[in-house]
Image (cartoon, rainbow, N blue to C red; front, top):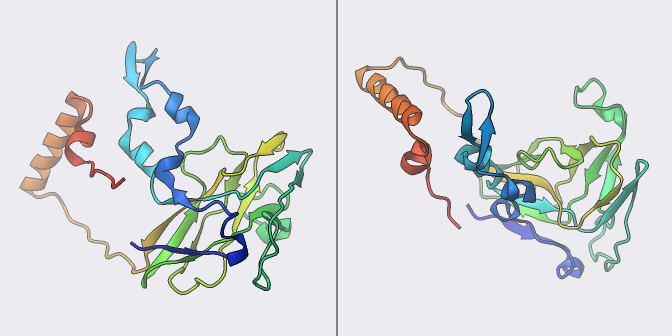
Length: 233
């Protein structure tokens, strides 16, 4: 999959570029012990650090990054970002804007306050037939906001930036949301509807099911060693 990012030429040397998600694993995951003692089991068990689906989800696709430091205090957002005047009419200069609370009226994710919007400074072009799935950075509940998930047909909508709305969830947060913070995790998805097929196990599938379950229960690392596909680096 070839993904093309473009920006205003006046900002080309200023903007942080989108990066592969695999390069932005959080410190808490790196510091997490591979095993922890379980009172229920009476022994050490593996943590999610050793769960390939958990980690692979966090490393999938690419991240859109906050372009500058944003200071948050008492619900107010402030930034100082000296960038060149964009040469393109209608181009944003602020890292944030907002959606009024009424735009989320009736949605369970609304907290009754205005939603912030991370402005985009990159356009994104995908190959024909593919859309861009944008969601909150996976398993990143440590971030003080929650991105609103969306899908954009970026094979056609590729000449303007995609903005990313979010609910500010940590009302007690006071400090700096640092430049380079991942604000959206994105990946291409095919637009063609899947064909859903339903079958009962035949003898071969039943035997495979029983063997796989027995192997997984008998020893650790079966999925990682036998089934997981190695990711390109």
